[in-house]
Each structure stands twice: as C-alpha cells, then as structure tokens.
Image (tube, rainbow over all chains, first blue to last red; front, top):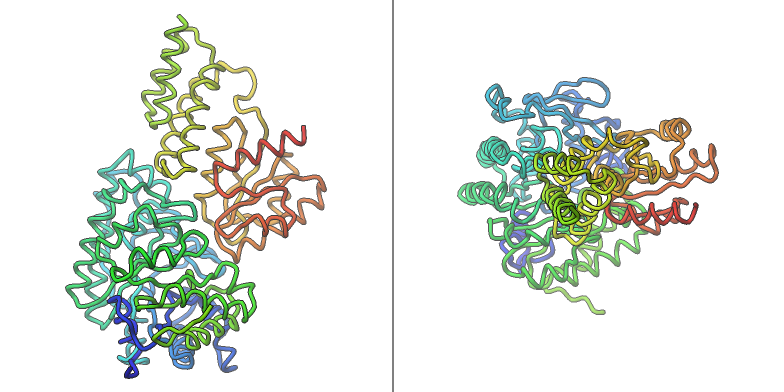
Length: 368
Length: 215
C-alpha cells in the first residue's frame, strides 16, 4: 500500500476504512505532560506553568514544544484546543467572558463551578458571547507549524458541557432535565449556537476534524437517561454533526464512561468516531463487533493505571492486544483512554507510540 | 384506619420515588393529620422509596436526575417530619465525606451522600479539594463513625493514601472508605482503606457492614 500522510490515515480511519497503518493521535496533552515528554528529546523546554498563567510568548514556546514532540513521534493528528479568554481571579480560579467561574486543578483541567444562570429569568440578562478569533490561536499555529499532512483536530465543548457550565454544576442541569425542561432546552440552544459558530470558525481556519468533548457518562452508566439524551442532546448533536459534515470535516464524540445506553443514538446522530472506549467500562471487542463499518473507534489504552503506573512492556502488550481487537478491517485510531495527563509516564507514552508502529501496519498480523 | 395508613404510605413512597416534591409535602401533612407515626412515614414509606430508586440506579434503570429529584422529595418530607422527632432523624451513624486535594468533582460524592442519608445516616459533607490536614481536622472535630473519600482522577486518588496515613496517626482505629472512577478494591487494599464501594448504592451496604462489624 502507498504510504499515507497522517491526515489521510486519520480521515480514512474515521470513514471506517483501512489506512496503511493504525493512526496515532491524542485528544490532549496537559502542559506538564508536554514538557515531560519533550524532556526525553531535549533540554530546551519551557518551565512548567499552566496555560492561563502564561503570556503569549510562553504559550507559543509551549506549543512549539508540543509540535516538536508531534514531529519526533510522527503523530498522525494533533488536537488544538480553545485557548479561552479568561481573567485570573486567584491562584485556583478563572472567569471566562460568559461570567462562568472555573476551578483550575494542578494539572490544568478547568472545571466550571459557578455560572451566570440559575433560573429561567437569568436568560433575559445573559450576554451572548461569540467565539473570538484569539481562541483559535492554537489551531492557526498548529496549521502553520505542522502543515497540511497532519490531521488538525479542533476540540469543542458540546451542548451538554456548554449547558451545565452556564449553571456551574452538572447536577443542576440533570435536575432541570426533570424539573425545568424549558430552561434545559434554552441552555442547550444557547450552547449549541456557540458550538455551531465555533465549528464554522474552525472550518474557516482549516480544521479537518472536530472533537466534541463533553463527558456524558461515568463508569457505571450514562449521566442522563436515554430519554433525556433523546430530548436534550440528540437533536443538537444531529444539528452540529450536519454542519461539520457540510463543512467537509469529520467529527469525533469524546466521552468517558459507559456509553452503552446511548451509543446507538450517538452513532445515528452522525458522529464518525467514538472516543475513548474507556477500558474500565466498555469492551472494545464488543463495540467493534457491533459498530464495524458504521463508526470509527478511538482510544482504549488505559491512562488511569497502565500509562501512569505500568511498565513499558505492559504498555507494549496492551497496545498489541488492543490493535488485535480493534484495528482489523480499519476504523480504529489508537490513543490513550482519555488524555496524556501529568500522571502518565513520558516513557510509557513513547512505548505506546512505538508499539502502535510495531503492531499497527495493515494488514494486521498479530498472532496469539 | 389501617387501610388509610397503608394507602397513604404507599402514595408517599410512590411520590418520593417519582421525585414529586409538592405531592410528598401534601401527603406527609395528610399522614400526620391521620395520626400516622412520623417514624412510620420515614421508615415505611420514604426510606424504602429511596432504597428502591437506589436499587434501580445501580441496575441502570434510573439515572442521576431521578435520584436527585427523589432525594429532594424525601428532604421536603423530612422537613415536615423533623419537628415531630425528639432526637436526630438520621441516627444510624455519622459519616464525613470529602473529595481529595486537587479534585473538585462533586457528583460521585454527592450521590453517595444522597444514598447514605436516605438510609438513615447523618452525613457531613466537607466539600471538594480537601487537603489531608483538613480531613484530619474535620475528623477530630466531628468524630465520625466513618470517613469517606472520593476522587475522579488517578492523579488525585494517590492523595487518599496521605489522608489515611494522617487520619490514622490521629486515630489508629479510624474507619476510612474510598471510592471514585480510578479507585478499585486492589487500590483500596493497597492504601489501607477500611473499605471500597464501586458505586453510590453499594456504599450503603459497605457502611452498614463496617458499622455492624464494629458494634
């Protein structure tokens, strides 16, 4: 088979086809993880700092470090994230333009804890925010630095996260699904409009793939019932996915947890890929046998225990096993089961990429 | 009279299960007007309703929305019953719950709180992003029967071991339970926890077992 570019590999797999080899991609790397992995190649790395604490030059230095890692490892796709326009409140809290307040964890994850809406009347005074161009800075820089042969994935919060962030609490939104469905629908509409604007901007700036990233599930099950998914999320997912496809891009749904109660409808809503098939709660062989040819699978390499605490040999064995289960026939992109967070050993991430290349050439030939 | 009592308790049970807060208030008022004992309303209607919704939740037949609304309906009923109790309504034991340092995920902890309160335990929720020394302070101040910790991230679950070590330095017989997405029985055993529950509903059985064994 002719050697493909990273972008061709990613897009082929997302179309459920078989590329020349299993594509390697990650949903995200945290600031500390980028530096940790980069140190395996060079000493010229920026100091560890969270992105909201960095000035523009420091952000660019960090991103250039990530691009160096992407080139060294020949990653097939790279995810660019929204670099939100935020104000620092104190060492642990930031505020965005909507007025949502986030707690920022030590590893850089920002979680909304307070929103501008608590009842329907608040919507009247809500100032609608449109995604400013500067939030797409990483996508612009990634395209410039890595070129067109790498698949550019753009990371957008979905309507679920956009809705609950307005309330500052997942529980409040889930409660309103039952008690104030009108407010829940209004929030989904506001969130979806923001997502649609972001999709259009990302398409204009050259994104190839959109990753819709709000978690819908936890280890045991989905957070919402299938009926609530149907009412408050499915129509919005259909609308978002239709626009993404119209703009010539592919779309991945990321959600941790056990998605079995709603996975049929996620696929029917138009998602081309489902990430990360969390190994603690979903068996990738089972998902593969049900959705082969209908949906690409991404992920499944455990980042809860294996990548942080396992050995390189154990990583190699897990990659081999996962490729044997998920890659035959195509429609599989390898990645961790969430992100490369600071707990993951840099050496183990490298072992994962190395093993993906060792076992991931098509046709897959892995015995016993 | 007995027929009315059975009917009213059944209706309260159904209203709690379905999260109908206003209906629960109305029915509890009616039950008290009919001289039904507050303890019977609590133990024969409201607690079994939460037990049922909790079981449905653990079988994935009910979801977080249903559990939250049922808990709210039960709390509305409890507020009406409270003045009729001389001691604490929730008197099976005292539990402190908190999410470990660096982690502000709330859902798992809050669901455990709902399930334990519904089963008759008094729960003191000390919040999220709690440092080991603050767990110790709360433990020494409140002297709970059990301390529970939650974490969603593998990078924060490791702090559970510090909390166990520091709380046990203050009270070597402290019973400490753990849970959360990255936590497993093997991890709980490794860090010396007294117990682990895979989900919110199982935490009730775990606490029941630990306290029965102790008493």
